[in-house]
Each structure stands twice: as structure tokens, then as C-alpha cells.
Length: 82
Image 1 (cartoon, rainbow, N blue to C red):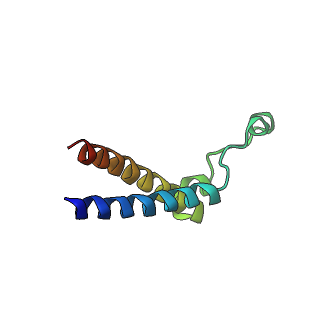
Image 2 (cartoon, rainbow, N blue to C red):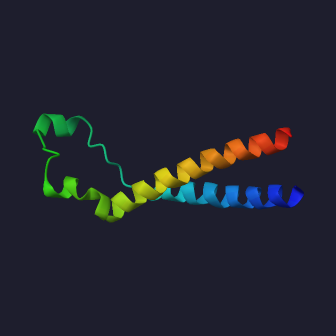
């Protein structure tokens, strides 16, 4: 059981570091109040195909790593209670 704990902790730290790095290098999606004043439309070709861009892939991997991080947190919590 100690080996499983050790492996999970190492994976947990790798996921945490990757999640931090991905979150820090992402560009800010929100344009704020200026987009409402200028009336910029979000219904264009770029927005429809955003998942194929570098930013879209970063966002997808951030979500995936966040889910993995949450699951690992719950698993490690359960293992340490036992």
C-alpha cells in the first residue's frame, strides 16, 4: 500500500505542476467591458474553430488536468483515511 501512495503522490505533484504551468501561460479570454461597448461579435469563424487553435488545446488540457487533479485529491484523501 505504501508503494501505491508513493506513486500517487508523485503523479499528483506532476499533475499539479503541469496544471499550474498551463494556467499561467494561457491568454485571457475575457475582453471585459470594451467588447460590450464596441459591440464585437463572438459569432465568427475563429470562435467556431477555437478548439483547434493553440489556446483551445491549452484550455482543453487545463480542464482535463483539473479533473485528474480533483480525482487524485479524492483518492489520496480516501487512501490516507484508511
